[in-house]
Length: 430
Image 1 (cartoon, rainbow, N blue to C red):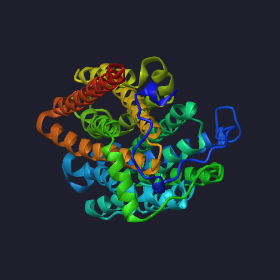
Image 2 (cartoon, helix red, strand yellow):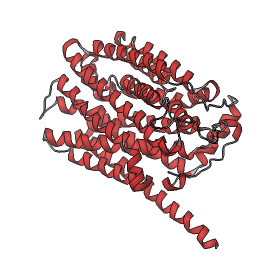
Image 3 (cartoon, one colour):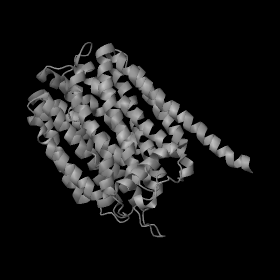
Image 4 (cartoon, rainbow, N blue to C red):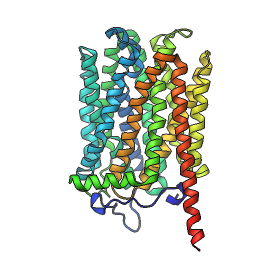
């Protein structure tokens, strides 16, 4: 699939010194499905995705219990999620610069090691303030994963397989998010939230060790510069690209919906008219399996509908799920969550892969800017969703989500019009 078929521009104005283009021999020695190392690479990054989301959102399903222990409202407890995603958003760009200089695999390994170490300290937090601080540090440590992983894939995987490869990494995110919440829900019901987050820390340790053993050494990485002026020029050039700006905004808006819904859903399901126990609430996150499927099939979706068509479908699916979840019927709420999750993960996989294809230089910075916007959206969704729930109940959270989806659709419509105008100009010149 060429850049033209996705609506991606083929160049971004960054200087070559920011990050040299991947050195690919004429016979293209990069990995492809069925080729040497591809399966190991896919599984390694899948495990990295599992660990990232399991750690990042380890407290999300436990917010009602955290509220109860510390005597705080949902809007205050939600900071244990917002601090982690905010820390990641703030540090993802500096960590991406380190990966340009020292290598993707080295930065990803160090990030996971620090994050799992902090994860083992989280259960011993003596107060809500200490818990929020630890979660912020954990999020900052995890910042080395997302941008470095997508940059690694862009350099080591053939272009035609890139959307599928990134989709598998995103699928690991969904599995990590699901398993983390399900495990914490049932463990917390028996032994409390502290033991639950400790178990997630132990699972993440296993994932981190397996990741380091399995991930193939990079073959096409070219070290870039750590000079602030070069980095600033690269970032400026990426932000000057209209397509990249639209993709960053789309990622942020999709994550605003997702962060808001899953931060608040535990409160809704433990209250009337559902009154579900904590273990059952945690099991609701099995819905993430739908996200695993939708993310891993995003490549085929783009092949049939094009990038913008896939984004329209993802946005429409998410909006339909939000509206359906307003019902006071548990089956309909679950169906709504299925649609929200499917639409979100498909949209995220499409947008993030388009960023990697659009940026031909400074890929780690381009991906880092997307991840920064994405996790800013998560932090905003967590806090705004909790505030909307406090003010207007579940309908308030749904209203916030629908506005974010309308933003996705509006930006995509604008991009469609811009692409059509750009296509007419060469024709008019002739």
